[in-house]
Image (cartoon, rainbow, N blue to C red):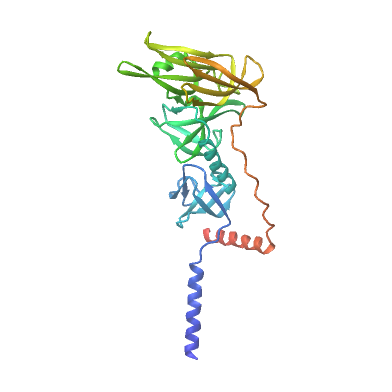
Length: 337
């Protein structure tokens, strides 16, 4: 009898211990959209940081208070944060899709910054910052959008970071990395794209030939209004214009490929002198540029990846599941009080 009572007592102690060590159930999930996210010990202006989560990390949501959530990392650390800084699984997949898609686009040149610049998940100042470009760092430019927000229009550039990560930055903060001896010919116009072509040997020096696209001023629904080819003159020892197309309404991307027999082919979508929209292909060969084709197009190339098919609708939750979540939230609140 005593042995049976002892075993029963031991089983009760073991069951109680298991309940105390039971992992708090999650009521949802979220993914860190920012480069890093602080999780605070509690809600309040001077609460210490309990943990820091990184971009793309999955967090389990344990409790909600208005727009704030208490979240748990895979390591078990928990803390409070703004729920609007967490992406859903679908939003995170769209951001990753943007990175993969942008990494496959023809790059329009590399750019640097004069001061640290935040990279946003979408072309909006209020969007989360997924990274930061520092002085001396360069990024590849892949796209552009003119966005009107709160009555204010701003130009945003799509940039590609290492690891197939892409995001949006303010265009006016970027500086295209083209040598000053060539950039001086921009005469105040903004260089929106550039491409190094073949090089010319001049004595002990090597001079690159360049193709670039410029824009008179930002705030336009297109990317450039002029296309210009610079070649190094061996006789005059300076850069000279070999080709210049003006009065364009041109769109990214400009695609440049080398020809097997020498020279380059460059193709772009633009309207010339307010004419219809065309895909124009040029050939530069033997120091001469000529038009290979003009093909009408209906619209400029899209500046966003095709959206994936929506997932199938989740089955309606049973009354038992909703009641279990309600009890879990009530239990979590009591533990916090």
